[in-house]
Image 1 (cartoon, protein in one colour):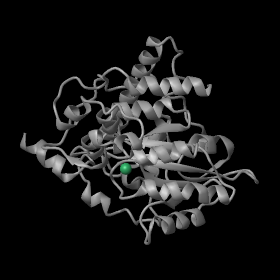
Image 2: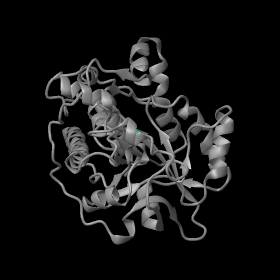
Image 3: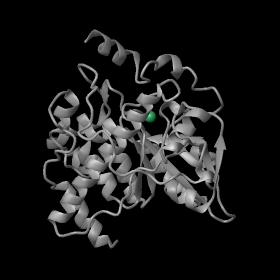
Length: 349
Ligand SMILES: [Zn+2]
């Protein structure tokens, strides 16, 4: 695709028509907020005083008055995935690349439970675009629905890949199979609706349809899940992608924490980060990380590009930094796997 094409696509998205994708009714605060698309592109634009309210809305987590349990306008994706190759089964931590290939995958989760709307970090995505960095975004389906303009902008950018992060951040280790299936399918179906909206906008301007395929990667919420969960997700055609470098937390200023990440990565590493209001200053860390990686001879790639180039390394059970360090989430997020507050709400109705 030419630069001119993508510039045009970008400008179409900025001035794009009101997104109606996935908003059958204004049933929740999430829907109300998303009914007024932000329609803004850069953090600089958001910094203008007239956009202060919009900037605040994107950069803060909003608690909803009641959990949003509503289904997407399409609940089962029309397009199914091909059978997952044997080599991509299991819980993938990182990828062994051929000698001399020094690519790493930066991954950003867009988590959103039933009780929140979690925003979007424009500064972070600006930093990636300014450095022409590739990235993979694991989006919650409900997040896709509550941030349709931002989702469309990510989808329209050829540097970025999107993956499935369940509908409402369900703990797949404890969720029953029917809930697991729903969490995956609702998200893939919501993604399809957005892709159709993107194609409608392109067609309205005489442009060819997007070449973006269905979501093929899955990230376990809280990193929770073992062999049985992986088998289930692999059976749906999804590769399960974890990380070998936790990019958030740690001590010191953004520069120091960026240095810790740069020192931790190896060729084929997958780095865990977030692209919404969940962490404090990921944008600043990433802005400083990108030149450090370049200085060490690393290039960025999407997760799928790493998978295409090398051999996945798998583990038996998902974790953050060492096995078992996320087991606590099985007691925090029980039942349907999305949180006790949501469960209480459901019972009281
Ligand atoms: Zn998450």
